[in-house]
Amino acid sequence: MLKKLRHGRTSSSTRWLGSAGGAACAAVSSSRRFRTAFRLLCSGLAGLGLLVLLVTVTPLVSWWAGVLAGPWEDPNGDILIVLGGSLLGDGVMGPSSYWRSTYAVRAWGERSFYRVVVSGGGPAGTSIAEPMRDFLECRGVPRTAIEIEAQSRSTHENALYVAELLAGVSGRKVLLTSDYHMFRAHRAFKKAGLEVLPRPFPDARKRASNWSGRWPAFLDLVEETIRIVYYYARGWI
Image 1: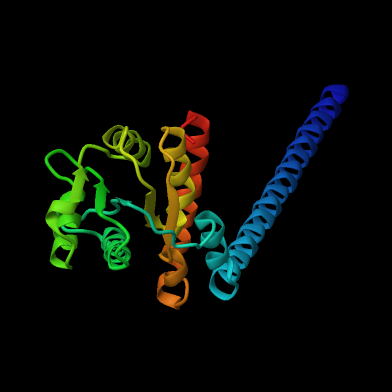
Image 2: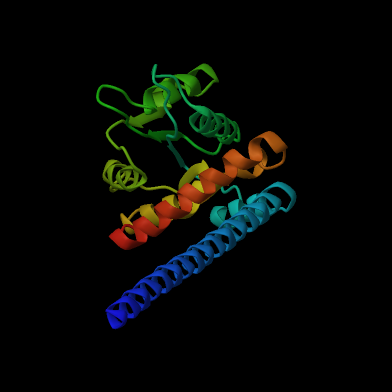
């Protein structure tokens, strides 16, 4: 009887010790997970802070846009190719399309081009090329000198359709688009078999010159860089 009592007490003590040990191990494990999560959170916040500092204070955005733009030579030629950009829901030009149209008017004013090709489609039943053409006409470019390509919905299709449109047409062809867009656009046209001279204009670089436009320009650069990687993967540039 005494042996049974002692055995019961020993079993109870063993169970208690095991339970206490398990709780201690669980507490240690939970503490380790908390410390790991805390370190990750601190690292993430530090990285975010560094990014904010780089974008806000340094010339990162202007430098990045300059790299994607390539040389700033503003070549003249015979045919000016203007790529469409953003299109608002009511068929009105978005900011990038407006600035591309504005710089196209400036290029036309140099009196070296005799023809303008505006390329850009849109959602079903719409086309960014049409309001851009109307803008060019209102700013003094003769409607008879403007030709639109309204089927393309990407830079890849811009290049394919314009190359088909201008097949066999002689003369120096100049490509005009935003600075951050020129890297991909120029290579897409070359891949499509149409040799063009790049004529970027300061879009992201101009926006980066003031605080309010710096972060939107940065996000455009990030998106464009992802598109460049995608185009390389597809063999489009």
